[in-house]
Length: 95
Image: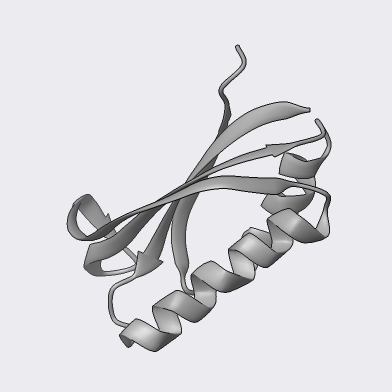
């Protein structure tokens, strides 16, 4: 199993409960495809370096997880269609 870190920026326009629901959907994707979540680091609301979809703030969260090598591709294909996720990035920590 490989170790990965995923950074997720959720829209700050959502209510706090909706933001947590979006992050819950992301963590469910990880576990659905055989990953195990090691750590969730919530940074909270931060100013973006540049506007994304006319928004200047986002809620940053970093998730460290372990999974097989095909899992990040599956997660990526599903997160891309989530409207309230402004940006995300998955990196391999083993390299």
